[in-house]
Amino acid sequence: MKKTVFTIAALIVIVGLFVWGSISKKMGDTAKTSREVALTCTTDMATEFHIHPELSIFVNGEQITIPTDLGVTPACMTSIHTHDSTGIIHVEAPIQKDFTLGDFFAVWNKDFSKTKLFENSTDQDSEIIVTVNGTPVDTYENTIFRDKDTIVISYATKQ
Image (cartoon, rainbow, N blue to C red):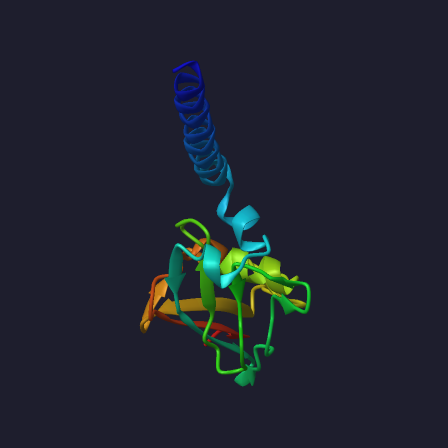
């Protein structure tokens, strides 16, 4: 009888620790910023949030190729990455966040803001325009990725 009570108590403790660990991990994940999650290595098995926005970038009318396997190395695949150069961005994260263009550029390790795209800075004669599904937005690096959105960033001389 004592052995049965001990076994049941041990099972309760083990299940309790497992549940507590799962809740703690989720709470810890939600405390992370979208940038922290975007730069974190992940696996397909950990994917809870999965979207595919499309990005095109133009500098003075010339389309910039987004690299294949951006955010992918033999040792790591970040939550935001590419698999080819089509502009399809893969957001495959362990938790749902409002991932942004700024997060993508952080993974790429390139500059992007209202006043800078790569090495190009705006001045009185040039500008950066961002459109989402054909509509201009003023959110620049804070533009939130949504599934199947078509995002275009253009740096050019003002017209």
